[in-house]
Amino acid sequence: MTERKKIIIDTDPGVDDAMAIFVALKSPEVEVIGLTTIYGNVYTTLATRNALHLLEIAGRTDIPVAEGSHVTITKGTKLRIADFVHGTDGLGNQNFPPPEGKPIEQSAVEFLIEQVGLHPGEVTVVALGPLTNIALAIQADPRFAKNVGQIVVLGGAFSVNGNVNPAAEANIFGDPEAADIVFTSGADVLAIGINVTHQVVLTDADKDKLEASNGTFARYMCKIFDVYFSYHRESYGTKGVYLHDPTTILAAVNPSLITYVEGVVRVQTVGITRGLTLFYNKQKRFAEVNEWSDKPTVKIAVTVDAPGVHKLLMDRLMNS
Image (cartoon, rainbow, N blue to C red; front, side, top):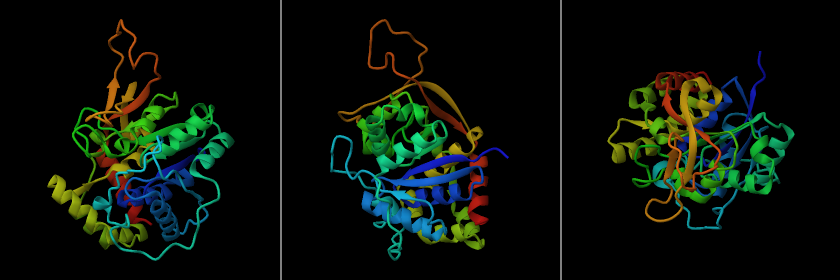
């Protein structure tokens, strides 16, 4: 038996974050060593509360939760929160009672640096929200980018329209400056963009199947799904929901589910294309020095085994 991959999930729960966390906890290939929280679907304080709540539902209160940044890396406080997608509580407007657990004393950045330092090359950070915590860790510890095993990012809209506006995907748009720091840090970064996650759909029929199962996680998800399904019906005209966060988690669990290309990614930080992720495939050598010159490459997912992701998700939620 190979050793289980250690993962830290940086999360802003969120309906699809809840699904991703549950799937990770049911994945024998990985060991979830902590959750760190960030704003995005909800504000950071509520993200922490939701993370603690989900671990209580899962019976995994042994897993530490470290609270992350409440502001962007440039100290911006005008945050874009997607409560209209996930409900005002982030979990389908169920207004669950507050969790009994508390976050640890360490901040998310301190926890990330400590764990990556303790297990150099062994920790995969799966970032499901804006990249503020990860960028702050990179800035605070010069060794972080080299010590982290991999950073798997849910973010970007490579060659497709964004989901915040035509240019930008939500997590990158949440803190473009932080995203640019992460993409140019020299860490082993794998970005899973909405060009890939929009290929993986959980349908109304799948929801019925989950509801009919005895899986604890499956039944819980069906309780919180309504707002999320309604949003997709209204915004995309789909009878189902995109599986952004679960696809990203499963790409970290089983890398064979995706294929990728390598190149340089820069993030636009100003103007109407703020949050745009631009990929340079390095096929052309430019005579002039430009903003992509001498930057380290990252991996960008280009295909996904959608049936494979879907089957793993369904199996792991129903057998919980």
